[in-house]
Image (tube, rainbow, N blue to C red; front, side):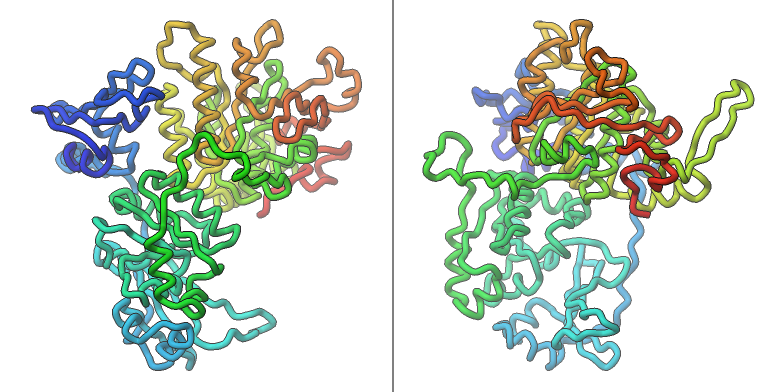
Length: 582
């Protein structure tokens, strides 16, 4: 992608002045609160960009700008080709092998019973598969005119086989997760997206063919990464999802990832689109699509129109830490959590173990650690994951220090369990705040990371600020809070207290946080009740539930870096109060 292509795709309004492309709004700061215009420009000769707003000041190479949006800069690709280099490893997929045929009478009859005609099936190029004497419908997924995945659906009544109910749909092994029907889409027109292929076919029955379907469940967003450039090239989306909790959650996710300015929402009556086709007909479906609208602009709202929050239905992640789970509801989405305590108190240990629990709970995580290399963080984290039963001590002959590592074979087990679920900020990267924030946004958009850890505040390099480092820290914390709220994620940040036992150098840090957790040691003043324990988590601020000054004592195993709840050996506990699922 060159500079002009980038402007056409991502900058919306812009003007050309010689070798400069000036955008109406900066893609980083969006003009700030005053909506300053034409402060952002791209130089097509030097391949650089720059924002002149003092509070933004973002600048860099055009390649960095492209990287932020998940596309490739043409001049960089040319350099890679000239120097015989590869930009990134290529994911290997297995080419679909099923021997499919044109749509069969059995498949047609099945879909006819669901209100979908033979004409629609043929227009959508639905295929059939004969397997073990049974007929199945086949949805074929293409990317760049290449078949990359087959998904199969039964056309008969579900049966119980060997005590298990037969699955309705499955994907051929090794396929690439892309959107179904991409190759027939005109991206200049609004693109309707549904939860399933039958839903998409139901829309097609209205003669509206500019519709795609996600490849699998609502929690699987890997298709955004595999179709990243195509997804970003769509000018307008129309989300038509089920009227249930999963559909509402997916709607919120995609509005944030696509951008509210180019995403409309279909409001409809029944739960399922195919049910609406059978009960209410094609005219109804066409009407609700035509009435799709943008979400209301955030701002002042009539109180009578506000929906009361039900705390029992708030999305949260269990942390494995008793006090946080019991009195704060775990990690509640969205939230900004500040962890503090004296140096050496174990802040990194406790919050690091909670990140493993988040992975276990099904939430992808992102870690920035400014005090440890990626390799050392992995060692400590994997020791916690495998527990004391599955580690071995190795004496260093030069220093006589005993070092601990997972037993043979266990590192590979953790790798397999955690692959694609935990991402770490590469320690070869710069520690500048703007780059860290860019990577956090990429981790959320591309890898669906929902829980973040920044360890710690003092290792982040802030932008120059005339009001000093405390103002810089405060502004960064405000940015993290905004990031958490806008993207419905949890951000944990470790902050060292100063000599006066204040968190950071500014009260703004604790004011902005939803929760404040102190790590206390037995030796700390006023912690006599911790005698016999190794430490405790103290809840000092609890915005959602209000319960504070609650202690959660724990024991600590030096070898495995794990905390656990009761006074028994780790051997008895099977590795601590929480065990990784492998």
